[in-house]
Length: 375
Image 1 (cartoon, rainbow, N blue to C red):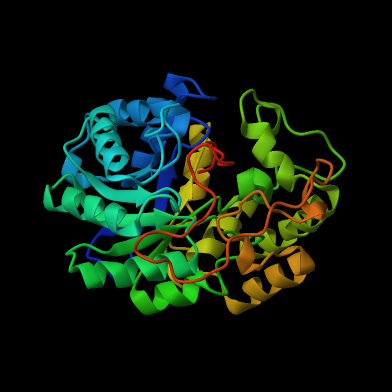
Image 2 (image 1 turned 30 degrees about the vertical axis):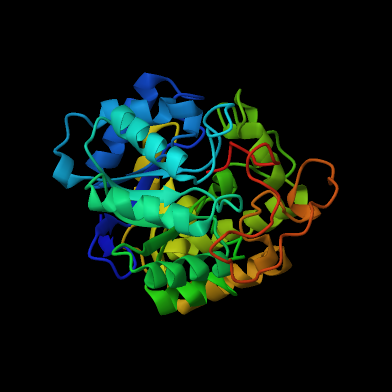
């Protein structure tokens, strides 16, 4: 397992981060979760990612218990705050109250005195940005958080936070962004990646295998495999149905030969593709079985030559989505991607203007159309 700096910070993370969205505390047993975590540790993974909202806190509890016997200084633990963890008016968002209370609750569930990386899970247009940044900075000063990150923020949101932190004279700044990013979904490339390269912010990319589709397990014209996410209970089928269209699966099937010629599995090709992209510090993998962890972790250190990258682009062609307007809108896939009937187009994103200190007049996060299922 190779390690990289998280952006331009001094924090070293494993190229493969183990994450537990839609698995721990929800669709896999405690025993299976423990086995996956042991497989990650055996593969040299030192970085683990979770969130307060995953299984309403149960995912953090499972991870905290499984890692409790591991030397804390040998791990990098990341969690997130913002999405709803309850029904109360202060149970979501990035207000000082929710940030502080959620951090303390996460520390208890994770059985640790601090987290290495604390991430704003989404942007909160209702709370003044200054309030959020000061709350995060206070947690850093208190030693409960070591580094700060965001997840699924647009380039203007990230840039506004960086400039405001400087104006406020805060000691801490954003060092990472956790976006959805893979061969098919490249919406961060036009705007987010250039900004992050300039500012020294690393990408901790999630869904490198696109819910498992890029592993080749879902074949065109065939039923989904038993035990796969597409047929499990819970919320998994809802998310993966957006990438099970026959046209998309047909293109992905053509990657099988590309992977074979490169001497790797399709999953390893997909994970290595992400790790070979500019500004990427690491990628987050999930798993329901330990052998999946072992296979994906083997992509660490793989270098793909220009011919392989060119062939990937040629195979996927027009299926690749690079629309920056879809940043932070992970469900806004093209109709030909999806196995479900095309839904009405989502409302357009707010204009990408610099965010004032008082926060924009966007639709409020609280009570609005926010999915608590997002990674």
